[in-house]
Length: 103
Image 1 (spheres, rainbow, N blue to C red):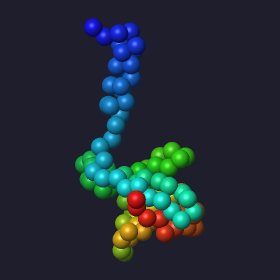
Image 2: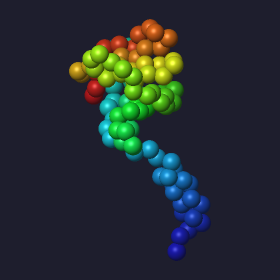
Image 3: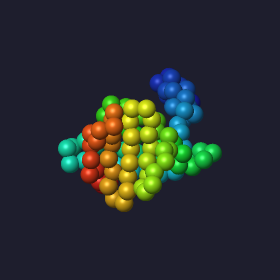
């Protein structure tokens, strides 16, 4: 028999599980300026078409963008670009965090 607290928590746990997005992969980055973030790539209909950047301020959805080399995801305000072992974040066209590496 479930206790009262378990019965109260069960609907919340089920709701959270139903809202979870499937991710094919995610990577944790640290930048020389101390900024840390995670980038996760979608595993939905078109794997890799969407990335989600998560940092201390929350989550930002970034659609895949054209790139001559490397991986680029961008919305109107934020851009994530990676090539090899390094990544950078741009906002308003300016690099705000560069030379970020996975850990």
